[in-house]
Amino acid sequence: MISTMIVDDEIYVRLGLASMIDWEKLGFSIVGQAANGQAALDMAEEIRPQLIITDVRMPVMDGLTFVSRLRSRGQSAKIIILSLYEDFYKLRDASRLGIFDYVLKSEIVEAEKLIDILTRVKEEIEQSRTGQASRDRRLLETQLIFEIARGCEPDGAALHAALSNLKLTDYTKQQQLLFSLDGYQMRFAGGDADRTERDVLMRTVRYLAEEAARKRAACVTGCVEENEFLCVLFGDREDELAARTDAFAAELSAELTRLSGYRIFEVRARADDCDRLRDRYRAARALLVNRLFFSERHAVCEADLRERRRFSLNVTKTALRLSRACAACDEAEASRIVEELVMRDIQGLFDRDAADNACLELFNVVKDIVDRSGASGAGCGMRSLDILRCDTLRQRCDFLIERLCLSMEQRADGGELKGRVLHYFRENYQNAISLQDIADYLRMSPTYISHVYKKFSGESLIETLTRIRMEEAKRLLRAPGRPLRIYEIAERVGMENARYFSQRFKAMTGCTPAEYRAAEARAKTEQTPRGGVTPDGAPENPRRKSYDAGDESA
Image (cartoon, rainbow, N blue to C red):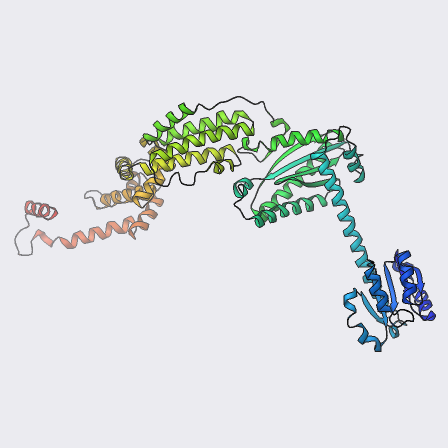
């Protein structure tokens, strides 16, 4: 019930209001009546009503003074003013007092307007109660998350108190979902990113997690560190708990990807006893901080914990091997060396600090080689922070390989590479050629060849190969003797699909192979006079024609 007080100096108005409406049916209870503002102020201090209906004109203390002093004492009761037409000028400044609504005394007889106002008062008060209850629960959930992640008292009294406050002590099983954003380190580490953008992103993640948790019973979520969030689901059956956890993770991941473009990396840990919540959290976090070692995965569990291996980078030997590979512009060998060191040796460490140290040592080796190579710009901006920002070892490996390739690219003679590629194409255009075939022939990586060739030739490898094939096709279409069929020409230039060959031919020449052959035949007929007679009337001399043609070509 909403506690209500009526204030009016006329007793018949107070009694009429109390009797003309079924207050209990509407959800209200009249807890006091007063004849003036002073009496009402003393009564409100004692009973603290949620709603006050008051007249304006009263002896001792008028209604507006009463409301003003009530507000000064910190009371937030809803106020409905009873007024006459002539009181209107007094009410112009009443808005600052937080008046909910006004009712003319002449309208009280019918009661409809007052009932409508009371209905709105009830809705607003109930919404306020719901909001307060929600805020109270969020505070309790925050305390529980803190006790799981940070609590340290041996008997777990605070943890059990937090569980009890949320009525979660009766559940027999718990599933923890600890997650972070992939790519967050790359975007925000180092302090050079927009702080506002970072704060907005973190608030978005918290909001989405809270919304997903709100839809599910016995589900608590909260932030434990920057870019680390914990969700705990409670239940009694493992299969049902696993299904709820899957649904929560799927919803959160989908919404987060849709709104921000980020994906989550999640770690799951199951407990059969509330006393083990902290142990399971620590196990989950050990996996989360080692996200570096799970390059191709976005979800892991306790079974993925593994023994650490020892590894120490031989800086001198590594520098010598990489220097030799780079000097020979053997990008494939340089890539293989880095790949083995990072994805085999450092991967086996399974210790974030040890891996960071080893990666930094390798980074310094690569940077030194790049700087000594004299390649302008390839080493620019190479900071140790760049490699530490990477979420996974795969990203770190690719970063180092890319830097080495850039240095080799700038050292390599692009013209020489272009010449070797053209020679290979002219010798092998009649066969099916893949990028890997070219890489095997040149002993360089496919990515490196594509990049350098386009830089120095202005066209891609496939564009050059197609151009060479079309030139040969035109030669075959002009050749004397039995005309070859289109599919035969396609096969001879290394394109087994005749339709695709015709499409590419038309795209480069503006006509189909058949149209090109016909046009060439007409041009040849027009150049040769009928009967083999020269324009001066003398018989045509084939030998002279050949000699003249040779002269002209010379």
